[in-house]
Length: 235
Length: 111
Image 1: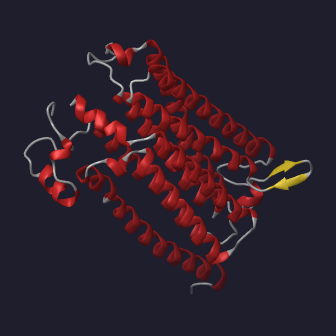
Image 2 (image 1 turned 180 degrees about the horizontal axis):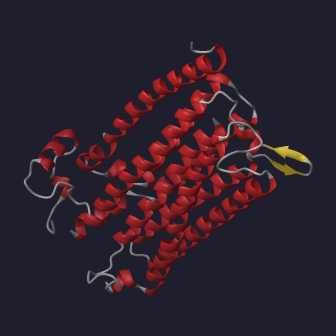
Image 3 (image 1 turned 135 degrees about the vertical axis):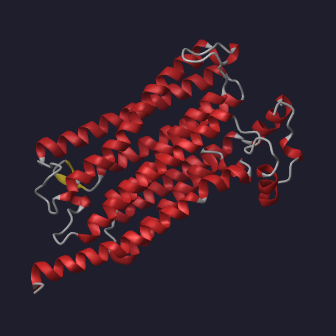
């Protein structure tokens, strides 16, 4: 793979059939870690899809009215309930952190250590803000409104179970991402990816491609939120 | 390798990321407006889906770099999604049947 020139290979579906039929590596020019991250994200897509499809099926088949999310997730601002205010802010925070991650990947490609590190750190702080706001949202629903996995005061009992399951699983992904973002911000600032310092769990040399792999994970978390926002909060 | 990599990086100008970033903000704002103006029924659902798929597509194509990847990777990732679409279709039919039988047996009586 070392002396592979991607520009000389045919593109499109012809390129695809030649790549697969080449009796060599299929994903040409793709780092193995990146390919593995994509495969993991694909399987994660299926997990989240199962949750969302189960939610859709249950919501479509309950006979009691489903709690109206616009009112359940409203927040009082100066005495006026604003629908989905916190959720909207959370969405914007997550998109912002996705943007900073994209810039971190770009600066990683350019081997710009400082800018890459700052943007990874900024992304981590954005993710932390998101998790914090989600904790606030959960505590409001649990302690103030009395939403439980087995019942709630707004309508169909299944609402709580799906809410905690889906947003909880997504929040777990964000939290894990934040931990890794902080670890990698430290690695970038220390210059691991410039000197090729070997990692703690591996004898392989560090490389800026790790930032792109981390970026894929982080964008995926944002991607899942797009679907949760649409199906759970807006629908 | 180094030369090929250099060419690759020069194609991703910072402008494209900022553009996509701005577009995502605008689209999120629009989808929030769907709720703000309290659109209902088919209009609400189609607008939600439209903005959702547009946002998802932008993130995958540009932030996750799928637009620049070779087809071998892109197709491996995107085709399994059709299985999910089939699953969704099946579960819509199943949900309709469940709610029909619930309404029928709970409120009309089966015997």
